[in-house]
Length: 297
Image (cartoon, rainbow, N blue to C red):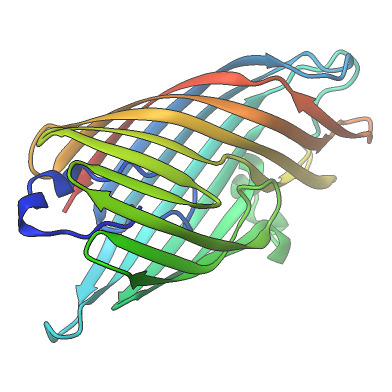
């Protein structure tokens, strides 16, 4: 979310906002030095009778490796390099044939981000593959490396209203694709509202140490996956949307803890079974719980 910071808001700015952890394209997570998040989604049923149910546990880690400000104060901006690791464990039992992958899927790599005036852009090369690819690097090829990135420009229409536009390339919609980023944000009193695509959010700064945010955003992903013997490779993809509420507590000026409750809807999956069958199936909506620790510095 975009934010205009004035002196009266310097106290609560450390609480704004609660960004999701899974994409280089999401605004608001720029200044965090360290972020760790854990999420668990309840078991939900597939529409296909040949499949049991899906259980998902996910974690995300982002650590700043390097940061540099512009040399001259008149040229406001930052350059940041981060380590990124997003991990998902899918447990999908099958009554006929097991998955061709072990279900342990990773996005592991770097994120380089530049903020300069009204512009912000980032590029993030990631190893997007099942865990056995990391144990046997010989199977890594250009298709296991996902290039994510985005570029966005912000226009301040007034002190409290702004508009932004740009492009994003990631896999949150279930496959790697380029999508537009567009929206408006409005900041008044203790509220911030950002309405746009592919995500929107409403934040309430209830107290200098407390903030509440409601968000909706895509929650999918795409990975290159391998069989146990590494002789077969395919793609695992999930698409869906997530809406949720986060309650953030600022333990100190630089440390905050967020509890998350949400729901994943319109979930669809595509993967291959060991017998060679390609599966495309939808799963029922599911509730999720999560917790996040962030160091802002």
